[in-house]
Amino acid sequence: MTGSYQRYTFDDIIGESQELVDVKHRARIASNSDSTILIQGETGTGKELFARAIHNHSLRKKKPFIPINCAAIPETLLESELFGYEDGAFTGAKKGGKPGKFEIAKGVTVFLDEIGDMPLHLQAKLLRVLQEKEIQRLGGTRTIPVDVRIIAATNKNLEKMVARGEFREDLYYRINVIPLIIPPLRDRRGDILPLINYFIRKYN
Image (tube, rainbow, N blue to C red; front, side, top):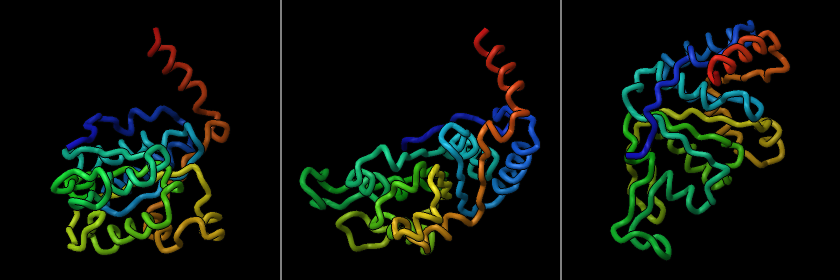
C-alpha cells in the first residue's frame, strides 16, 4: 500500500508565538480523537505538516499517512483513486477491477488536501464514508466497510463556497468536526526570528 511513514512531530513545527503555540496545543488534543479534522490556512502555512504531526501523535501512528491532493488529480482519476472501480467500469479499466485508497487503507489517516476543489458528486461519496463508514466502487453496487481517519485541508473559504452552492453544506459540517486555523506568518511575527535561526542552522 502506498503511503508515508515520515515521522514529523509537533516539535518539527518551528515557532514560539502564542498564536502558534495555541494551534499546536489544540492539534495535540485533536490527535487523541478519531474525529475528522479540517485544517484551514493560506498556502504555505504548514497545513500538511500539521496533519502529519497529528497522525504521528495519534493511535494510528503505526499505519501509513496517505496524502491526496484533490486539486492535482483529474476528476475521473480522483474518483477511482479514492473509491476504486469494478471490472468494466470504464474504458481501459483494469480486468478484475481495482480497490481504492479507502478500501485498502485499513486503520490509516487519509489527508485530503485542497478539499475545496473536490467535485460535488465526489463530495456526496465522501459524505457516505464519513456517515456510514462504507464505500461503493466506481461501477459497483456492493457496499464495502472502511476504517480511515480523514484530515482535510483547504486555503479556500468553505463557508462562502457553501453559500454559493459550490460545496455541500452537510459535508462541510461533517469534516469541520474539529476546526484548526493556521495563522499566516504576518500574524505571528514572533516566529520570524526562530525560523531565521532554524534555516541558518539547517543550510549551514
